[in-house]
Image (cartoon, rainbow, N blue to C red; front, side):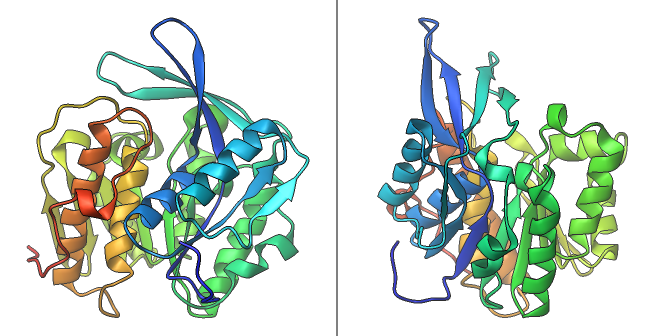
Length: 315
């Protein structure tokens, strides 16, 4: 959604990745992907002004990614064009439609951030969301963390989704240390049940969410697949079941959930009252469920949803 307003409701910072998905005939089809790109597109489809701060390769793949964001109404005024190659992910689907990925990331565009390129994220207004590989891979990850620190100090609400890609992170211990460093900068941290099982093996998910609260997080959320979502804020926990749907695949479902959550929290009262959190979880779960019913990262438009933003209840 292009706008003349210099302070969009949500700024998304991070990678745009080409997903190469194998078709039944054995050929591969290129699809736009990458968690931050998916979140920005999801927000725009939900009618939320969204700016994407990404580094786009000028290659054919990079042009595909940029065109996808632009066609979906994402504001790209601060996006960076670079001759670096685009990041590739080879997606494999199991019998349940769950995707695993092999990544080609060496020297690609998404991790080469310079401080000046990140300055548009430091407005001190709205929500700044980031996560996935952008917060882990060098050399850009440390610059992204510095940008989050500055943006928070200026009054921006910070949202993080670690979106773990285990094969690229060198083991749980360093990744856990990075996530906890980021949690100290964040107001919202959202992760999947699989993320937590890898980062904190054997630790109950609610215990991890409370631990993130102790680090300073205002709202900590975990998605539970078909089990819906669990969140903690203050002394309360919030449990939201998922609707039963016929799953095509789960590609982009977590990012769609994040987009739904941010869409409603961006409209919520300051301080995110309990009723607004509960309603945002309901909305996010529906957004994710619709995404699961169609192939690929294809989040719904606002008019496709039945769940309005309305007061909820907490436990």
